[in-house]
Length: 170
Image 1 (cartoon, rainbow, N blue to C red):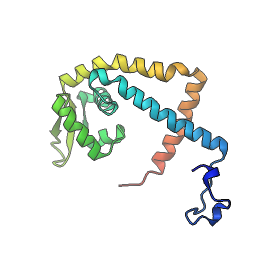
Image 2: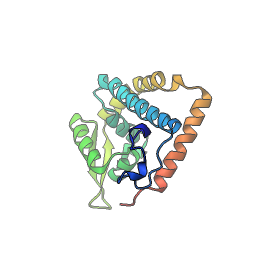
Image 3: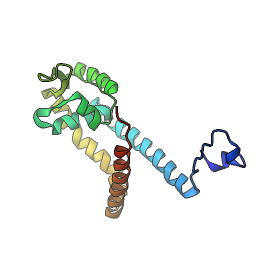
Image 4: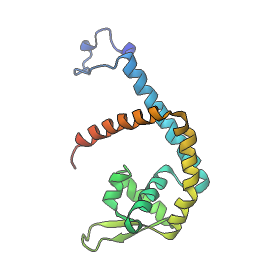
C-alpha cells in the first residue's frame, strides 16, 4: 500500500498492526520487481505457445529431463517446480493426455507416485529448449551486465534462503 493512500496518522488505522511502511525507494524496487517478473513470465509463457507448452509444463519437463531415469517422486517434483501438489496433479493429467509424462506407483510407498517423462515428453523438451533459452536470453539475460547477473543471483539467493528458512512446515 502506498504511503499516500494511508490516513494522516497510520496508527489511527485499526488494520495498521505495527506495519513498517515501505519508503519510496523500497516501494519503487518492490513494484518494479512485481511488474517486471509478471511481464517476463507472461512473455516466456507466450513464447512457448508454438510448442503447445506452458511455463509450468516446461518446468516440469525440464526437471524430469535432469532427473535420473527421467523420473521423480511427485512430492519432490512439486517442491522443486514450486507447484502445490494439487496444481502438479492437475498439470500431470493434462501432460499425460498429451503423452509427455506418465505416473508410476512407487513400489516402496504404496501412496506415493513417480512422474516419469515419456519419449514424447523428451522430444517436446528437446524441441522447445532452444526457443525457450533464446527467449530467456532476449527478454532477460541480454539486458544485464555480468555485474547485474551476479548482483541478482546474490539478491535472490538471500531471498530464497530466507523464504526456505521461514517456510511453514506442513
